[in-house]
Length: 244
Image (cartoon, rainbow, N blue to C red; front, side):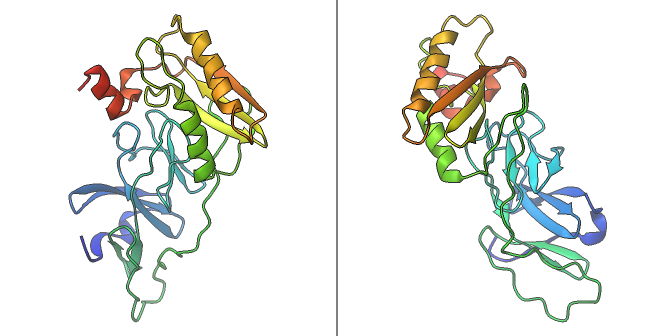
């Protein structure tokens, strides 16, 4: 797709509505929030599931399966278990028609906009912060930062399950990572409640984070809900274990 494509009408979406469309053979989810329209790839980057029925709050959409959150404007992943963003598409409204362009495209100017038409999305909206942790006691949540999040993820990738010989990120064991100043809060699980390597994995995760210069303490909390399944693994981990 090299040009903006007409995909729907404003009247098809309510004030808090959404619609799945196909754009250049890619499933795209249109989301209306008030008088603003967003378009993101309708596939969770964690496990490939549709985001169609995900909860939309504060500029974010949550995957209904495992709870990964994505920014509707940028497609950026805001929490585990997602470690990769999803594609976001520029949107323009012309009269009652909604147009979607290729990622990174600039909408063409709207000529003779009809009275009462819904304006196109501004290009300078701020990224909205993530919500709090999903279970247990309330955990302070930082403003999301891509660089910081990736550093914490990379640190935890150094922790390897001694039985499967795959790091805990690619295994999908980490559910959330949150920061409060120099303290890191991690919620993670094990492949089974009786995993004999559990204490070792928890201790290594704590040590991996506390080796970072700007981390004084890491608190690792084990949770068993939702339970771990092989679907949480990345494609690379599945390939290593021969799961297709």
